[in-house]
Length: 373
Image (cartoon, rainbow, N blue to C red; front, side, top):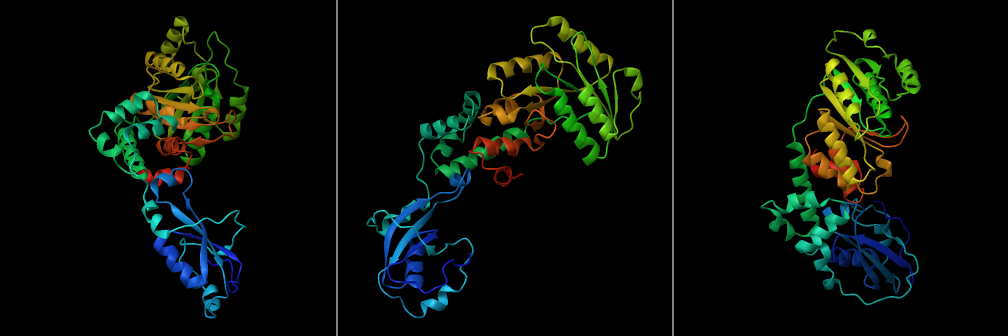
């Protein structure tokens, strides 16, 4: 990082350093500002999001030049420092200087170990449901994890979650796929997002069947979208291809099904069987209460669901509640969706996305690197 102030330090000016340790601060202070500089204040600077748990904190040092520094310092001020070590720039006025001893801060490079109950409270605040916490605490490694510094403990928990997720059987998607779920879950929007990826990214050929039962299933928007993609959209089974090539798929968009309507559930099951649909995607509004999501999973079991899609994630304040379902249930997560329109986000990288949003919304690239994906 280039030095921001290129003039010789002046008496009375204050400068800010961001360094990795107290020893480094002492060295930089002497080299850049000379023997006449004094420390005005020091504070610990932590990273943002998940980074504050996974990296040691840095120190922000504000120093003041009391007298003219050495003449040779001018040439040094025009050089570049190693990237990421610190920057040097006139600092904003400090309200009140406070005394500081560097040796008192050397122990702050690593967070202190956390107690078992403190780590558990932190994970609860991150949104991890009790059932996931119980599973984590039942592992033989929990006592060791709870004694680690916080950033190392969270790294171990990340590895645990990854191992659990990768240990779940991942079902491949077949050539005949149905999108189903309760009314208002966003089935048709989810289908459109997946369909666009299938056609444009995977270069697959597709056809869509808009299924109608006694409950209305409007399909004007889907028909227009399919026409734009060059995909056949029909309301008759007879219009669909009887035999599919390896790069072809048929999608069925089913109307919403009631949780307590036994006749409707039976009708859906019969239609899925008659169409020989083996891949059945249960679409769930993730903003629903956990108890409602559990009931939707029970509905999925009755309809022999194989995959799950979570929608309306932009309305979900704590993504951590999803761990109970992506780890403790048999359905294979297909993708995550946000927004109520086709233009909303579509994320197939389910694990790193939930991990990132669970631990303070650190962002997918950071979570993915820490998860080893």
